[in-house]
Length: 104
Length: 184
Image (cartoon, rainbow over all chains, first blue to last red; front, side):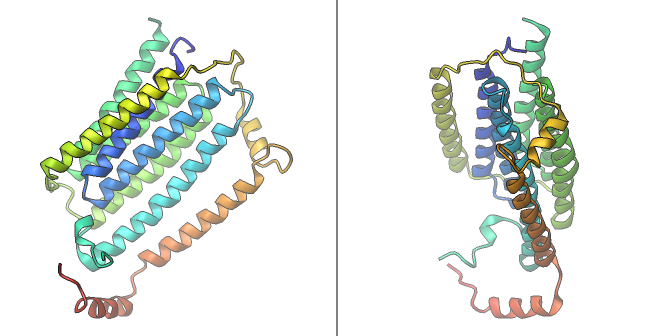
């Protein structure tokens, strides 16, 4: 297990973060943008767990941060989907380019 | 190469491959299914790191909760078999370049930093994690736990209020919004 250096785990999480960022930049559908955000949050969680396990094994702070991030991500996804469904009712579309009422 | 290393690289390739497919698939339902596989792969990564509690949390909340929620909202809002319109070519290239630049920069930062590994083993049981989470003393996380509970309650009530259908209010807002809709 320790034969894999921690930098490789960090490379994986960095790649996942930027995959999520690419999806966030290119997608125009709100649900797919939400999925990209979930990927980015997960890459951060991998980082927290890896740091906690390999660099600070006597503490548990990374584990708790991961748990709280997962909880807040769940709350965020629920609120975002409620907003998306409400937007679909009034606009019949969940494309970000179609929701421009508040654009200056 | 030991078996552990091989397993790590297989899981990593699986996570990254399904992640890329998730953000590039043209059909939204397939995108959600690829996201599901990516999240399962991340749970496998936690199992590989022997942090079983977080792996279980990952499976229960992400795979069992959030992805199901996303799939429900896909079914509620659009035809899942329909292909999404392609994004613009220049936008795709620009974002790919930006993402590549950021990725290379972060990798350089990781590469140049030498992490001092600790020889100590990470052997916390779930009982210890729970005891420290609800501990009000030194190093305890009782206050963040309560704050997060309030946040979840607020999110739940907020979701119900936002997504609740109120026909009178909806028709009123539509009537007031439509004439003042700026067409630019």
